[in-house]
Amino acid sequence: MSPFTVVIPWRSAPSRVSAFEFVTGWYAEHVPEASVQTIDTDDDVFVLAACRNRAVSTVGPDEVVVINDADTIPEPGALRAAVEAARTSGRVHLPYTAYHWLGAEGTAQLRAGVPARDCSFELVIGACSGVYVTTPRTWNAHGGQDEGFRGWGFEDAAWNLAHETLLAGPPVRHDGRVYALHHVAEVRAGAGYEANAARMELYRSAAGDAPAMAQLVGVAPPVSSS
Image (tube, rainbow, N blue to C red):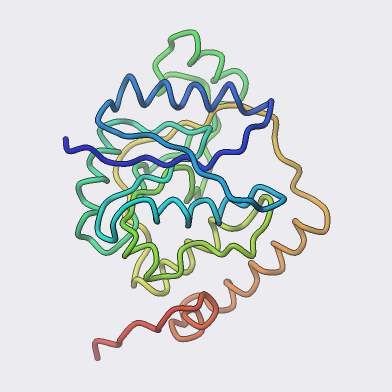
């Protein structure tokens, strides 16, 4: 497998350090061909969308980059298949068909040496985040992720709608699982969260309407094949 870059959005927080260290250690052991780095912005709050957008700028326009949350591990085979396919597909790839939230119990089992697929979990229906595999050209063609989503909530769901609308289909999924490790949950309430929820409604309104979505995310509308 050719080398590739993995970028982890990361701002240190006491409850997240343990998961982050597990993820980076896992990559070193199981995907040694990956060059792993972290990225952050100078925003006063942690803006995942901004970090993910910066991540794609670390490689050339047609090189593959894996954007990997700091608490999530994929399965190596699915990840490698996604990396190979993302080079030329023109879509973002997700190296999973099932998202397992391990919780405290499953995470403890994982740390004790239980294989990830055998750990206790909660299945997250509709997940479209965690690990993205893309090229900068593909990511930027549908606007990347909206940095107007600040703090936590909705940036991944909004991105998914933009992808479906502007790239003529959903992200490509590869058969496998990702495993999200336990940490203290972020607060999803308050003025910032409500602002994100309101912004999400703009994406729902534009879903399926390529010119409207292109205007919303600031890209040229796709050229019709008709």
